[in-house]
Amino acid sequence: MKYNKTHPYTILEYLSKFSFLFIIPVLQQLIIRPRSLLEIINTMGINILILFLIVAFSIKEYSAINYHSSKHCLYLSYGVIFKKRSTIPYKNIHSIAVTQSIIPAIFGSIRLTLDTPSKKSTKADISINLSNKNLNNTLKIINPKTSYKTVYTSSTPKIILMSASWSNSAAGLLFLAPFINKLGTLIGEEATERLYSTVDISLQLVAFGVPPIAATLAYILLAGWVISLLLQISRYTGFTVLKFKDNILIKRGLINTYNRILKITDISAISVKQSLLMKILKLESAYINAVGNSKEKGDKNMLIACASKKALKQSLYNTIPESLFVDLTKQSLFSIFPKTTSIKSFLFVPISIFISSLVISIIFYTNSNYKQFIILFLIFIIPVLIWWILFRVTAYKHSKACLYPKQLLINGFRRLSLISGNIPLNKIQSIQITQNPLQKKVKRANLKIYVFSERKDYFLVKHLDLANVENFVEKVNNLYN
Image (tube, rainbow, N blue to C red; front, side, top):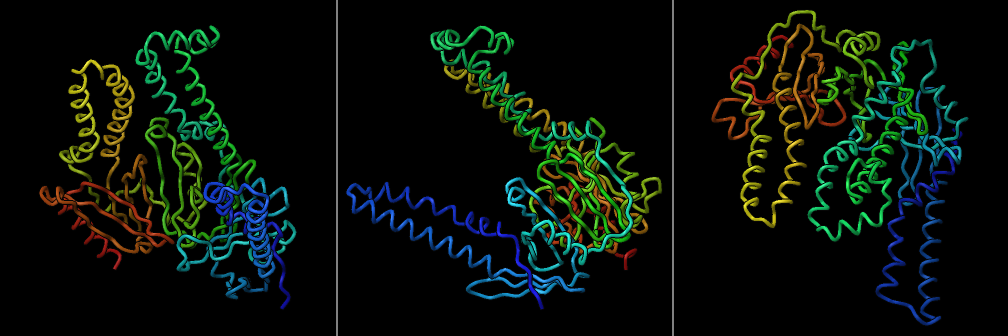
């Protein structure tokens, strides 16, 4: 069996794992403080020896990695101290990812990642660096190309809009500008005059009357937002979904490109997510829940980047089987919703913080030394709390659990995202009914649906009537069994 070598860029990856050792020279300067020529030579000798050992170990690790693509399996051998060999049948591969980043691309390296439904929930089964030629040869064997059709292509304006809404510095600029604007009053007239005297009047005009220090920080926030926006746009530009006979290919990225191949039959559920801003703009994003597809951090499971409800629905119909997408035009067999009185449970936390903030502000406002700080605090915190309360009201209206002949529709929320889960009955791993101490008193409960996935992926509906939840679970079990 002839084994092939991975790309030499692997050596640099191993070297980067030892970057924390750069603290050693710093500690030497702080503790040993070499002054004489002999002391300097000794410390430098130790550092050179450590560097040599790291480089030698990295080269040895790279030379130990070998792979072979046979007709039915991929073989991988690796390890210096402990020699290991892995064999992965192609039929068991659930996810194939190809990633090309800026620095590896300079060296001509592309990362190939293969995932199976294994016990490794946070780490890919195989992740190797290959040259473009070796990558293409390997993919031809693992996943032979067949005819395909494009089922979704992102809209550039919507990608920009989505990226703008996800760039956190925009919110920081919005909330902190009035906060910083009051800073001049707090630091005193003399300090303010000095600041104004050192800044050109054009800066004040551009900042529309904002004090120089506020303008400077505002420009920093704005620059951060622009950078974040450009990164987000670069990440999602060219978002395209191609459908083959049994697989789908998700492509995205302008500078750092990311391609993922998935088996359609391995998808356990589809979730549709919205932030409050996306809800207002009537835009949605769809994500995949599947075994062997949640090991990487970030939003690598995104299927539809940003689309209107109609466009997203059409794209899903063209991409996934009907069993994975609930047809909302049909009547559900049984549905449960939070009761009207449950809205108090949805609003309890944000309103409690809102009231507490006001009470604390009133108490400290009586002291003249804290008046300006309290004003600034309220300017900053009130918009955030109002937005949070509006989201919770929307989450209350959004929440429900619906039973269909072959699927479940679970609408809930997590953090600041509204989530709708489309779950086939045969993909349900388990169902849990949970209660906190307050819910026990009022006989309410949370419904949690776990689906087959690499991690513990679940869909949650909060603050439902306990009797309704128990009845719902019984009907699901009766229908499925």
